[in-house]
Image 1 (cartoon, rainbow, N blue to C red):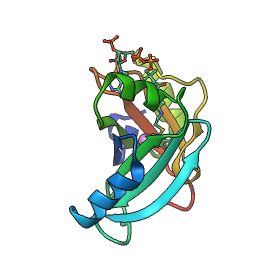
Image 2 (tube, helix red, strand yellow):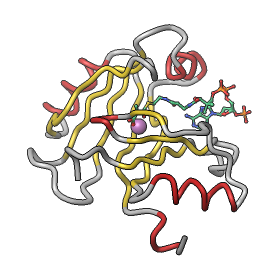
Image 3 (cartoon, protein in one colour):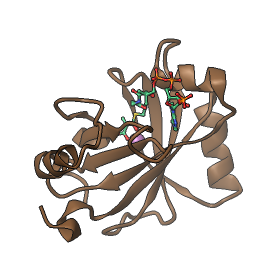
Amino acid sequence: MENSDLFVCIDHVAYVSPDNEEAVKYYTEVFGWHEIHREINDEQGVFEIMMAPAAELTEHMTQIQLISPTRPDATTAKWLEKNRPGLHHMAWRVKDMEATAATLRERGVRLLYDEPRIGTGGSKINFIHPKSGKGVLIEIVEPGKAEH
Ligand code: V0V
Ligand code: CO
């Protein structure tokens, strides 16, 4: 795959805290961000709220994903035992999950899942392990049909 076809844009940056309702209130009232979507992802053990700088999403608009863990064994709950609330991962949007994952694997990148899992709004997601992400947890996401 050509380098210029691998990634589209930064889809979202994720902020993890124990209290998502408190976080969304602050982002809305103080920072003026707009809530555009919320859901619980049981597999990932997260309650997530997608925030945008405008009421309507436009193509390539980066979102902020506010996350709280929904159970003590969630990866983000374990992360909060070791870290203060803060930035947890960034997500790079891809056009073709299978092709991008195959190219990254060819280049020796460690992906967490053999097959993509389901993320926000029916998207396909996988993660680059922080050891392969220069110390950063990087999600790769192919949006679901309802999104851009
Ligand atoms: C752990 N490490 C991190 C990190 N979490 N580094 C940067 N950013 C993070 N968020 C480092 C940690 O400092 C250790 O480095 C090493 O990785 C191993 O960490 P650990 O504490 O032993 O944790 P593990 O290995 O049990 O779990 C780490 C991984 C886990 C990345 C494997 O968090 C995971 O499976 N993440 C993928 C799923 C996920 O994060 N789901 C929540 C978002 P040293 O000390 O060894 O140097 S769900 C989502 O975003 C959705 C649904 C969506 O967008 O649609
Ligand atoms: Co995410």
